[in-house]
Image (cartoon, rainbow, N blue to C red; front, side, top):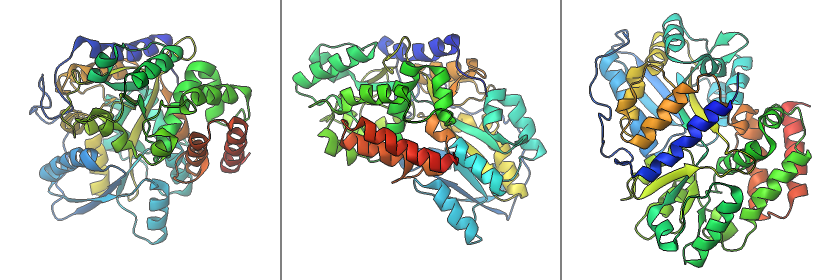
Length: 446
């Protein structure tokens, strides 16, 4: 896979500035534009009357509701009956137990490249059929196609993408404190301190979900250490005891270890799940002024009365080094059973038809080149979507998602657990590095 250029980073980072213009629309309840209106189908699907299909994903709440609308359209167009089965946070463990018991779902939405590769090695996922491959090659850049491939074969469709280098903030809290969007890490800490002095806890962290902490680390590390080191650490070509990791953890510790900057303190952050970390920032009586989260936080903001672009705005993750980082992520659809219905769903998910449905609801970004940006419900998401497509093959993917699941994708172990322990004790940089390296070496086999 190719990686981020200055052009791409500039394009994606600039998206955050759009929030300053007061762009209208909310997280999907309404639309300032077309917002997913009716459009003629672009892909033909087979009739599957009488066939059933089981689909699993980690999504809950509004994300699950919006994905269900996509599945409903698939049912309508094919006659198949689709059952959604929640996997819980440990997708790899869930699938492993189902495969062992002989009851694997037909299709799974995976979050980690490393998990897809592990499943491909074990023969658990099935290659894309000709129709799905055709739709994928026509609608996605080579970079996204490569992410869903292993050993020269195409296995997955990256249906949902995300920009993970954003900070959402409560505009009223910023206005009351007399602060503006910070550009760099020093300014970010200064803004946080001013917010604290104004009487609102500055930063909401969903530490109960370890993956949120990997996002914090990756953004700091990419900006501070640079893309070459990022790629090396992602592949475990350098150790987690490397000085660059020490520097990044020390920088992150200047936030996590500062008194009064985390909503609920370190203990509260460790007990806060991701959805709550967002909603508590934008509810009527906010418990925090800002939260670092990907674009999909808009779906959670939609559970409050706040509107994206007015009450809730975004700025790029503050630059720790010379430039703000740009980290992307995504959910890839794979077939665990090679049947007509599974392949038809993958074909549908690779088409703009499926992306259009969720894009119009908000909290969703697609790398599908054929998706009309007008379907996004507001200017913020319209521009994020345009920039993602314009990036082509030039982007950096979430580091933990590239790792084996045992290190980068499981609750209570590996990177998730080590960074939760670091949040509990931000002074223990050396101990955190040692544990990360021990876990990484075991998972990578080196």
